[in-house]
Image (cartoon, rainbow, N blue to C red; front, side, top):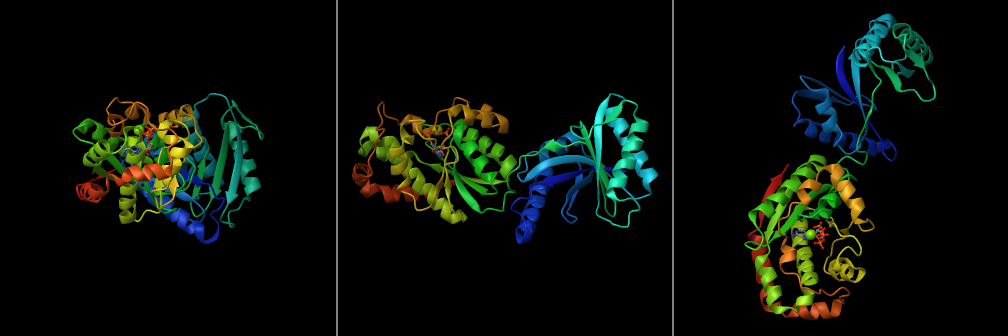
Length: 391
Ligand code: ATP
Ligand code: MG
């Protein structure tokens, strides 16, 4: 009898050819997640099932790693055994349960599946017989068919597997099943959450961060690298482009009305991010914007920012309150890093009273004042970009 894990995934929408793609991507993501766990692992995909088998692992560590993989709905620590007849199976089930549950009282129900039809008991008989053996072995166990504490599931294949525990997975779609997109990642609370949410739908992430040395420090940059690494625990490796934005920002500061600084700066951020997005094969941009959160996120501001982009811009947090976003960032483990008090390149050049209802015409007129310098400055910023693989 060996310990293993049965991985259950949502099957809605993964019929036919899609199912194959979904399962292959899921296996890839599981293998990736397990690279960071002690032990050796083998992920197998017998028809309609995914198993993780291995040696020298700690069960809790494996569960924790699998709980970060999108596409998994349940993780069931299970046992794999050879078919040596029903009595032998019943003994193994009872022994495994005794080891985990001791003699505390519990309720249970047995369910069985017979994928191999030559097994002498059908699934109803197997459940009934096994239930009887469990009641015999555990004086404190009672059957509860409606709300059992433990659902003891047994599956007869070439080998037999059984389990009675299940840990909730992330749900969503395996990364790699829905194309790629470029995340504008700042050191704030919102953008890491936005990246997480899009990755959860199966999208591979690239990222761009704008910093403004010496106005922003090396620590502020490291914070963003750390955030990218935390998001990467879910999304898989992220290529983070770190753009030196200082000269672009200084030019805007020098030439444009100060109440328009933020909105103009954001338009250039989008433009540069879109440049890298095209290079990386991304089909959209992702931001952490949410309506009304700050002056640059009113409907008018979003319209003006959006107008500069050719690609679709995805804003998964658009209708969320800050508290809801914070709750997700705490859950995914980015909050503690996000609230570290390092300066952000946007906060350095902000005006006291930024426009809250910008209009595209006047903003574009202000941008004309940059005409002579901006192309060179953007080109320079792009050429001097450092790309860091975060995993
Ligand atoms: P966040 O908490 O994600 O920083 P925020 O509430 O501070 O968001 P803004 O500063 O207006 O809001 O930024 C809105 C979005 O623009 C961010 O969610 C992010 O996607 C992008 N962004 C802002 N600053 C940067 C930056 N320095 N580098 C990359 N993207 C940025
Ligand atoms: Mg910010």
